[in-house]
Length: 426
View 1 (cartoon, rainbow, N blue to C red):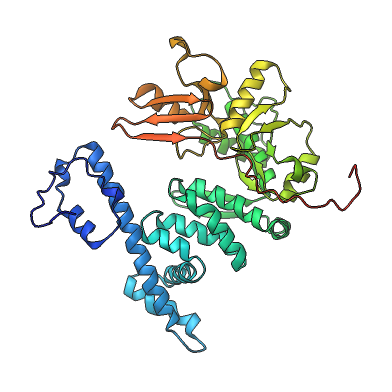
View 2: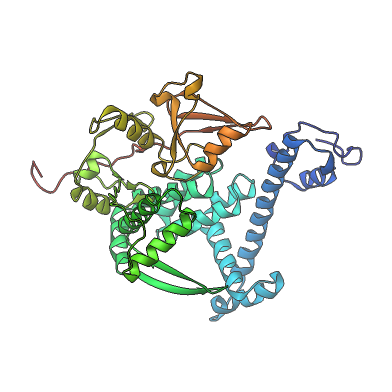
């Protein structure tokens, strides 16, 4: 370590601060740095180290709050515990109660998640996501989900972690997942909320397939408008939504076809397993829901999955080759191929990794989906991108940092095949 008394602020370039375990000494070292003398890479490294320290401090606070909660006794202790926390932390009673609940869950039911937060490996939003996703599970199922998602949580965004959590929750207790989905359908509703500046928000809770299809139709109609329409895409979708509900003609409306893509493995399709399905543009869905959507489908397309990696190897020929190539690449990568971007592939540009005018072939190993923002970033900035093998994207930032992206496995091979209740052919 370093002696903070002799540390010359700003004169330690290239130190990997984010690799140090959070501690009071690390806090002193980072506090002594002259931030004004850091170069771009050192500034990022210092920010990453502070992020670990923030998570470490939050874990320490949760342990103290859980200890406080455990000391409260009496018939009214649960109701009024938050009232003592709220003024100390200058929080509302509701926020204080939520923080106490999270602290208690992490300390009693999710100790491994708390340990990762304490080490700064994950941050508070990720710890909260794990807690929220497992609230509906019993203790063994909670432990199973935690053990599945934690190994990769450090390198995921919160959105990626939530998708992994959804899949894991559905996988560890498929029967309960199907029951919860059926119950949740009964809670579908539409709400109206006032917003400032003369605006209002209409919010709908719908089954995932209906919501996805409805948004896809709005998006298709918006994109089919005249090219010289001055409205942005968000405004177009909002206006079309209003026109459709009020029975007005949709200006410039063209005939649209909406495709909702559902992925599920053969065992689940046959009713021999209850692995989660996946609704493109939404995420994991219960097995029962995936089977219902598959049964209603007009077209099925078989995908060959590599059993070692869980990645897409091939797609059955259902269209002319050019169309099939487009579908195969989007099916392989599933989202924008910039790390952490969750824009669904079907709403992205299909881009040549090595530009076509520089000899880049139109082939799976040189194509990938990029949202419009990251397409522009690749084209107009000093970020660089390579694809050494199909589906593996390596980005290099202007500061020289390297990031890898590969879509998560389409199928995780923990399939539990069970005897079918009916004799063949089912």
